[in-house]
Image 1 (spheres, rainbow, N blue to C red):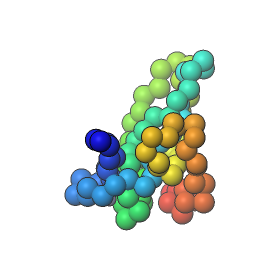
Image 2: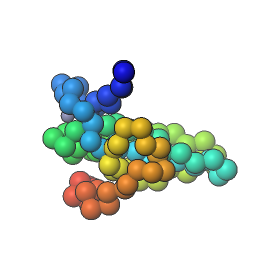
Image 3: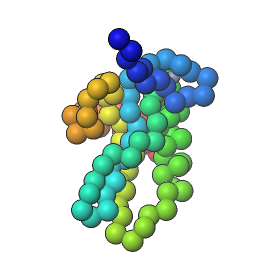
Length: 95
Ligand SMILES: [Zn+2]
């Protein structure tokens, strides 16, 4: 059976992702996680910091809201709403 493995977003890394770096986005009626990247344990800090840079460039339309970058424990096959947010890890990296 073919299983899709999500790998780390770091350009030189092909390890399986352990974390999802994403931000909760809403347009007032609909909300979802906007994914900024995936990270293995070694590159979580790099991917998180890059996401923090990129979110500053994100242009919101009127009515759109985007929250701060968050880290979720990535588990393949789980829906976004089932992912566990890792607040403690975020505190380590938040600038
Ligand atoms: Zn990696």
